[in-house]
Length: 399
Image (cartoon, rainbow, N blue to C red):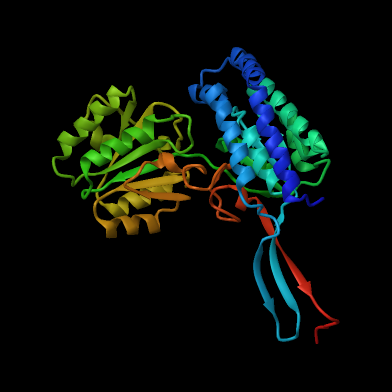
């Protein structure tokens, strides 16, 4: 794959930002076709589908922000000279070709492509059929930006494949494929991992937990819970489960207050058996499977725990390993929680809604990785490269 100069890559991104601005009305018009054709009842899916002026502004901002970031390709990671005279230099290098499979969100067609391209990767975009018109138009914008700067439009390509064709492509790709990022639910992730013949970096489900300690500031806890649950229900960083220590002072009164606050925000409250005895108005859960579910809805599950250890164990058993939070004024307890909970992002006294590339200082993101190799958390520009060793000698042989 050809290595592009940083200057030409940034020129493409500058052109793309201008093209998005010039064509914002046409982009929104194409998106309206997708909205009109949407027949599902999944409100989160619909929320992710919508493009408005604010969303176009965010797309432009993402492109401009990446153009200002340092080129991640060719950075020196280490440089050593061995006793035998060999000079060994480890540098960052592009992956090659990345395939991202995603549902509904046409803004991914911008963010994924801008990051992959700046990191000198070719990207194949497999968007969901519900965003067909939006994605086709955005691909045209990319192709215009590439061709304006003398580059082949194959650097960024939208794949129009049905499920069977996608399965076949994963098994027998008709071009080199170096990395696949499935960005969606468990069914999509399992489908890709079953059929792919190259590396898969999982952008897993949310199912995020928050633990309220007996040492919590209750007002702080309620504010964080409300924000994490209601700020954006379609976000993979939205809150799903709250574990509450039964030793909190005025436990019953505070539980009832939390329930009333959640109902004011139109949240459907589910409860385990101990909490349902305190809040009989909440729907008591009927089976354990619900602890594994990512809700993506105005729905939350409240559960009672005896101590920190039980909270950690519950989270590590059921969560999607995406984000988890503890509300406590005890810093030692917070440190224990953050060290022992197996999640990509762990929070002390803050909302899980910050698990986002832009919010965490990474910038635009391809996805939130819940894998441990090669990276965990927001996949930003610096994470879309691998490494390569350059070894310089003068006739050395191994003896």
